[in-house]
Amino acid sequence: MHELAQRVTFRMLQKPTHPDEKGFTVRTTEVVFLIIRKIAARLITLVGKIIDDIGGCTR
Image 1 (cartoon, rainbow, N blue to C red):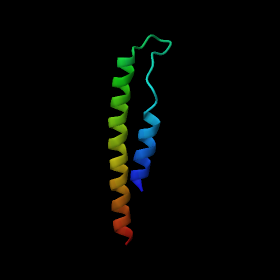
Image 2: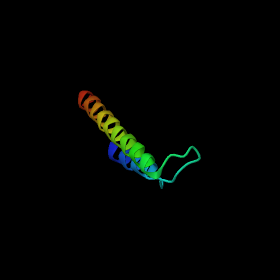
Image 3: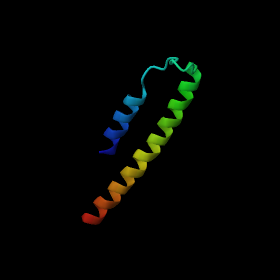
Image 4: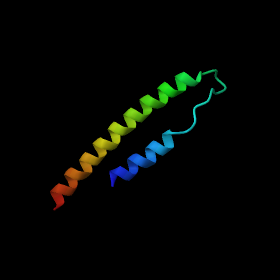
């Protein structure tokens, strides 16, 4: 189940990077997206583990 969430999040975060109005360079945007991706992946893994634990308890 959380594999699907991971794929959806990954797709959402794979927007093309381009300089925005504030003058951010493409590189900065890429770094920010990488950090967000890592955090999102950790959160999804954590949520998946919690769901697995709850599933294990109800069985």
